[in-house]
Image (cartoon, rainbow, N blue to C red; front, side):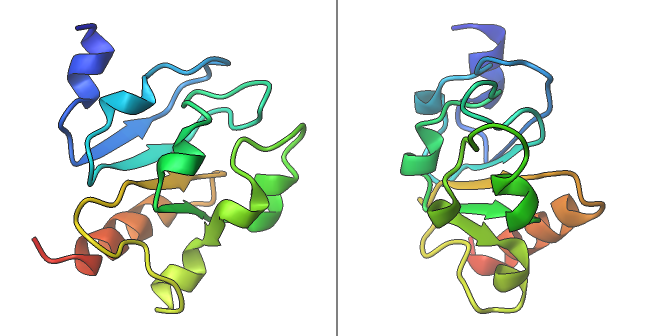
Amino acid sequence: MTAVEDAVTDRDVVIVATGSPTPVLGADWLAPGTHLTTLGPKSTARHEVPAVLADRARTVLTDSLAQSVGAGGSPLFPADRLVPLGAVLAGAAPARTGPDDLTVFSSVGLAGTEVAVAAALCEAVPR
């Protein structure tokens, strides 16, 4: 097991904040119920997390749909998979439907959204 694999395996929350153009973790390292926040590159040409997470995640949240799909190159997470953070906070869309849902927050860097995502996820499913 690598240091990174050990750091993310069986964690409730994983935050990836690198400038890496290639994935720094394996999608299968994330247990059911994990929430992943990605802050680094998110295009098909450069991405710090595996592209398969878009398919595996119950919800892929973003703080800005416009920036997520128009941020140079092809976006890692397709527009039809992205849920605006505001919709979840307003109660118009669920972040989770059960404790085993994998969720991803694809941050484009709007200030304060990471805190709002964490609060919404903590309130969404009682433990």
